Image (cartoon, rainbow, N blue to C red; front, side, top):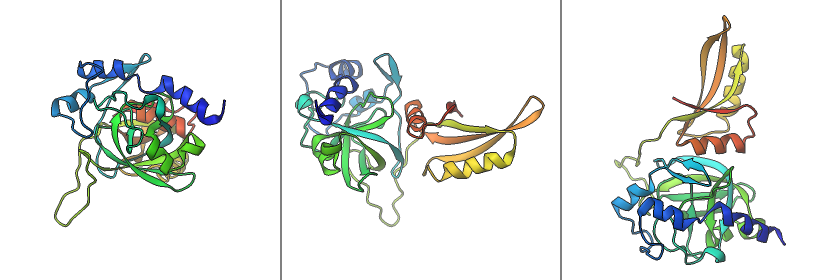
Length: 257
């Protein structure tokens, strides 16, 4: 079995448990579908509820234009073509769409392959991938544009471009769309000497971008100061876990401010 075939087999358990998810979110028949991009306010609210897959609970969150995320991206194609996605529309492997565990449906996202520099723009219309460390599953068409049809998976950077299926184009006097973002964080280190914490703060400040920030918090433990280094601004527990996995942070754990 070649690498791509193995990857597709693994994806069978990672995403597209659509009947269960759609029923849980929407209470509708698995045969029902909506037109691409036409998601009602009620349906949209339903897709933002927490949900559980394979015994793990996920917490959809809201993001803002310009928010970014890094991680591993994969793709899914013929096996799921025509099935019902979590948004209620039918999956079209030839459309530029994607599955994300927590970002809102119809969010427009730029996907940049960090291995080859190629980019594509997708619209989120499904939930997944339910594999630890992966942040996005592209449709076949979108994946092919950035080389996933050859590599199967790749390191990517995601950037929010807009909402409701529309890309935000800034103009004078118009404020950038912004919505609330839950403040989850990751502790990446703890030091008795502040100089060590400062080194870690600068190190991780180079690895993250807005709206995330790296801070130092001073605590007293055992009669001496302890300087904890936190990366704050993750939109959900799962995004924070993906950050820990992606950067292989030994001893890293999630905090909630």
